Amino acid sequence: MSDPVLLINVLLLVLAIVAAIAAMWTRNLLGAVMLMGIYSLLLAVEWANLFAMDVSYTEAAVGAGAATILLLTALTRTGSREKEGPKLHWSALITATVTGVVLLYGTSDLPRFGDPQAPATIHVSPQYVTQNVGKVDATETDRLEGDFGDHVPNAVTAVLASYRGYDTLFETAVIFTAGICVILLLRPAAGQARRREDA
Amino acid sequence: MSESVVLRTIGGMLFPYILVYAFYVQMHGEIGPGGGFQAGVLVASAFILHAFLFGKAATDRLLPRWLVDLTMCLGVLLYIGVGIVGLVQGSYFLDYSVLDPAHPAHAEALGITLVEAGVGLTVASVILTMVRKVNGELE
Image 1 (cartoon, rainbow over the protein chains, first blue to last red):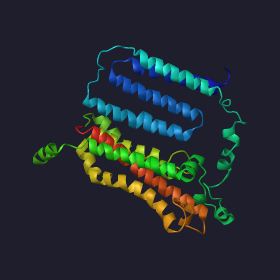
Image 2: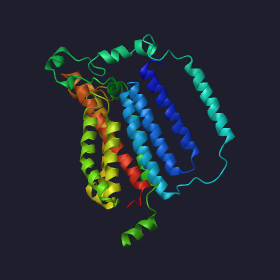
Image 3: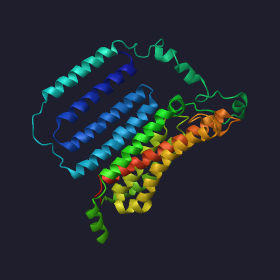
Image 4: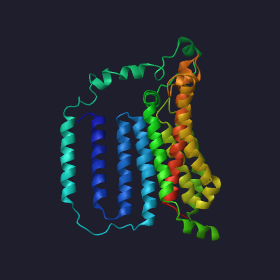
């Protein structure tokens, strides 16, 4: 436990678990939303600690930011107290526990954390990291021109937009579809719209 | 709409800085961490902050809803458009190198920038639309 990075990892994960359990336990929905925001922010710091900066960014922006705001605005339309009921749902607890155990069992096959000989670090990663730009090797003239136009040094972006351009296109299409659905579902009813125009 | 002078003043000062930071995350995505998704959420959060502080009507004046609906579609169309340029030029869909055949690496960086801009536009518009719709009666 002398490794400070490991110590911070453990601390962050313990805090995240505490926040998650507290979010489930509280009957105050506003508090639960805030605790989920804290949970996301702790995970974002944890990702940053693991040098997964792009994931960390997304977790902080989407998990702690946008999702929290969305849930808060939803709360303004509902009550802020959870309705009384059994605190413990045994079937849910058993399902979650079994899934967790299976996942933990699955991780026993994974290479050790940070193992330099892991397939993920020796197979394609070196190519992503060393080349200048997505799939196309920068030609000598491009390199000589020297500006960063011939570089996509962030391997994550190169993989996302170049190697997996179709994936990202369809992810964008999914988000677009979600937006269209929200517009369609939450549009004011015909009569309501007319009343608003009158007013 | 917030009654607190402190919140409105500080929030009003922060608003442009959030937008500039979002622009930085968007344009810098291929060099450092970040990209369209993150920048889109940042832009949306700037306008959500604006709506919370100055009210729905003020945000609607600043950024009309039809414009948000338009940029939502434009983002996806920009992404698909970059892909179709590849097809038209006789290569495969989303082949960035056709954008500048003499310098394929430049072209790929340009293509990635355009595609990320499309992602950013769509994500920002969708998140903003979601919060605006769910929050219909916000004042």
